[in-house]
Image (cartoon, rainbow, N blue to C red; front, top):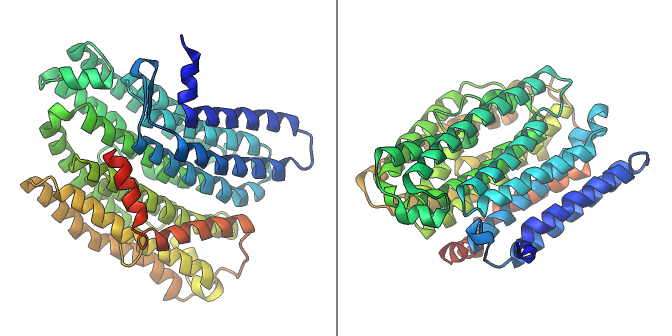
Length: 478
């Protein structure tokens, strides 16, 4: 084997190097009183530097086509790395407020990087088993992150539900992959695309594969684990699970459907139509009924996953570009919301009920304002970036040109009204609802301020500077 091929996997190689550095640093600083600030500074610096190889990496195909890196995949890795960096910054508040968590700070960062490495492999796979390997590399460390507060009943329960669901979905996916292998005699993406034909065996393989990845994306009807896991996991981990993990799975599904299952477009498009309508509509209806903020954001993320899948319908480079742009904007807006929820949780005895935000504007006007900006972006209200991201996925879906594509876009447009309603419920709680005992005025730590500043810049500017979408369009077309 020519091990020099690893040099063509620049983002993955540098991420492995980061993982090794963090491991030895954590080991060397075990008894040091300065362990925590050094580990944080080291992790943040290394993740910031990791953005460079994602930008500079050239398209490559190594190991006989097992690994295929494209310009679009590298752009997606850049987005995922940026989201992970913000999550690592956000985590400081949660870690500092829990003495037991502080003991495992090094492990938290290593699990975070390990999960990101799995997502890298997913996005650059050229073979179904390589893709499955990346998926498991991302899922297993994520289960550990979900159960990080293992001394808390809810976190342990969330971890158990997540790993059981992940195991079940992986089994379903492997079952579908075995059907594809039985029909085509190969698992290389390019070879499968050339030999694939519409038969009962390949249709079953497509359905099982889509169902397995539907669990990762928490699309309806594969969403039942989402609310309990989001509620039980540490808030920082919930933020990571809701945006970074979902973005990687959405990009991988988009690439495989377009590249591998191209001969079966008619079959998977109809399946997508049904899943998108169910995901957006059912999630919106259930989100209205939630009084706990993390469960509320769980159903919001299910709805947002439905909107992301609209980009896939277009089956074009515009669809890939709009999916990446939507993920980028979603990362900024959703992480901003979770950053505020995390601050409220740490200053309210661990409670994340919506009622805790009553009168929040009177005591914490800055946090209320930033929360409102993020919620408006998620709802798609102009002039924030969320409006442009929704517009682009609608355009990508409508580009397909069929009656059913227009119908799905119409249903998605109608669903923006109830989504606006339930996002405004939180705004109403903060600005309008009065209470005799509002949350006290508190000062956010510097890490939270930095995370919120980065997210707010993204919410405001991504929709204004068209160069961002134009760059994503160029890499998608390439």
